[in-house]
Length: 362
Image 1 (cartoon, rainbow, N blue to C red):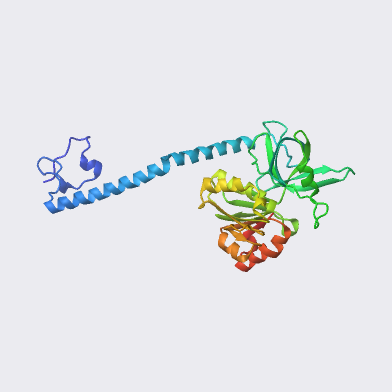
Image 2: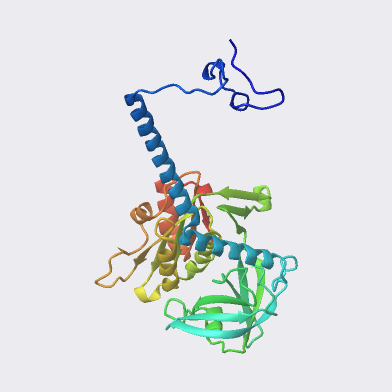
C-alpha cells in the first residue's frame, strides 16, 4: 500500500527532499528512519564528530585569515593606496607627458644623510599637484652654468606618483677626483642647493613603465617594430650599484605598497658600508613585508672586518644565491655604473641562462 500523503496542495518532507516511499509508514505516512545498532550508532557519532571538527578547524582558519587584525590592517592600507592612486589619476600634474616641457621647482627641505649624500624635497606647483611620473620612468634635472651652458642628468624620485604636493630625491654628490677631474656637475649643483633655490625638471622620460600587478611595459624603437613589449612576472630580482638603487626602490615600493603578488630579491653593490644609500628604508621594508616578500643582500668592494655579507665585485655565484632562477615569470631589473653591467652583471646572467627577455636595464 502506498504511504498516506498530505492533503492536495500541501508539501511533505518527501516532496521537499525527494525521499523514497520506503522511508514512510504505510498506514500513517509518518517518516521513519532506519534503526542503528550500538556499533553503527558509535560509528555515525564518531564520523560526525570528526566531520564537525574538520569544519570548525577550516572555519577557524578562514576567520583568522580574513578577519585577523593584521589582515584588516593590510587591507585598510591597500584601500588607502587605491584611493590615493585614484585621486592622483585625476589630479593636475607638474610634468607634461605630451609636450615634455620643463618646470621650475623650489627646494622646500634639505637633509644631509651622509657626507656625500643629500635628500632633497621640492614643492610642486600646488599641494593638489602630483609629479606625473609613471613608475619606472625618470626625470631630467638641469641647470645653466656661468657660461650659459645647460647640464642635465637623469634622476629617479624616491617618492611615489601619488604623493601630493612634493617630490623627493636622494642625490649622491660626485666631487672632483683623479679619475673624474670635474666630478658630477649636476650632482654638485644639487648638493649645493639651499631651501628656496630652484631646479629645472623635465619629463617623463624613459622606455620602461611598471603598470602594476607584475606587468612591465617596454616601448620598442621603430627599428624594433615599434609598439610595446609587455612582460608579466611573479619573481623580481633587482641588481643595483651605488645611486642605481633609486629606480629599484621606486619600483619595489609600488609593488609592495599596492600589494602586488610579486616576490622581490635585491642585490646592492657599493664601495663601502657608508656608501649604502637608503639602507634604513630598505631594511624597514624587509622587516615590514617579511623576507618571503622582499629580501636584500649587499656586497662591498671594501668590506669591514666584521662584515657578514658578500665582498667584492658582483659575481655569478652572488647572482645565483640571491636572484630568482631563470624562467618565464622572472624579471631581473638592473641599474648601476656601466662597467658593473658590461663586465660583471650581464655576462653572469647570460652564463646562468637568463635570456634577454628576462631582464631590463635602467
